[in-house]
Image (cartoon, rainbow, N blue to C red):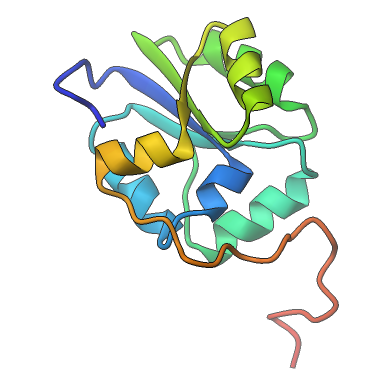
Length: 138
């Protein structure tokens, strides 16, 4: 996906885009090789993003917290001064939000093809609802 350009890049994945990959942690690890900062942006509550990234063993440099995607992209761009800011998303809404905030937009399928990442046959169930069982409970 780098295409020989600058490695001075901030890369943000929309949570639903990240969920589409067969191995999200591998995607993050790979992206770290040619991105300075990598993180997750979502409209979902913070605990949903945190639960997903913890389960997948993803260490993110930033996440959206309790903000929406537009505000998160604006804040990340102000905090991480890199040559490029790229947002990988899943919808026309994601593309519009990226453009409004000065980010390059890549559809998840295009990013996957360019970087050699595999999109899973079946994406995970939504994690927007609290879990009924706990992993750390006896």
